[in-house]
Image 1: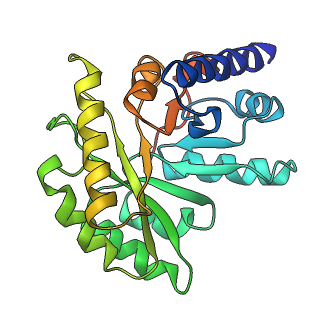
Image 2: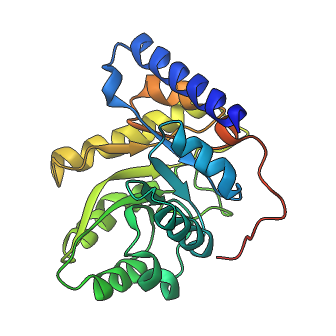
Length: 233
């Protein structure tokens, strides 16, 4: 799987170049390798080449991979959940995930809280930044109120925002809009709310220029997804 290692190195170099071009420090941007519908062998190859943060968008695939990584001694991996999370999957994934990037409704937040006990969970609020009917996420004009609601729930730590701009339109204006929302939350609600997860394989350089500190790259590292892989949530 040398191709994965080489692609990962290229992605890291491009992230570093874009970060420097934006006048930012090299340690400001974290790479999340989106491993959804990628084989375990490709995921292992990325890990063995130094990648430690992976993103999955279904509970079933995350559980399979997290358990496999643990069984093979790759225990220092971090898992981010980046898809629409069903409430009946919450209990299963909580022991494995370091960050849930897709909190988009109060009922899910309450379900998370119910299973946390005395533990805590870092989350990002997913924003439907383009207000697209086919996408999940909180509407931009509801984000501030939603954040205040989540902040009242014990155990949930809102660390920032995640969003995906519309494909057919220029991404930059949507990235700027998402950053403005994050800045408002940081100023008016919680100064610890600093994370921005935006930018993927085709637009992460623009996202870095706009101020993201977390980019999600999948096919740019692993190549085309395995169409036969399990897709159930």
